[in-house]
Image (cartoon, rainbow, N blue to C red):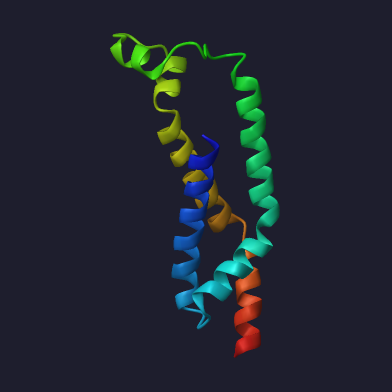
Length: 120
């Protein structure tokens, strides 16, 4: 779950930075490094939140049930559905969180703008 969440965040951030930096006349890797440096706190908060969720999740989900058991079961509860598609849900959640952070929190975009203004 943690890896899927991080991969989605990195993918969405990379795509958003690529699209944003094209208009700013700044190199991609410079923009990406600047964005990640400015948004490091949000990434750490995301990691800690996922860590907390994983820590308490064992209290609510039966970990002795395997994926094969869930696939063979006919009617699944919402917890079982979540467990069955955990990686997919984590990927979608991570991408969504990063997209929202990019669109509504402009700290990374402002940092890219400052670097681009210095280069011009």
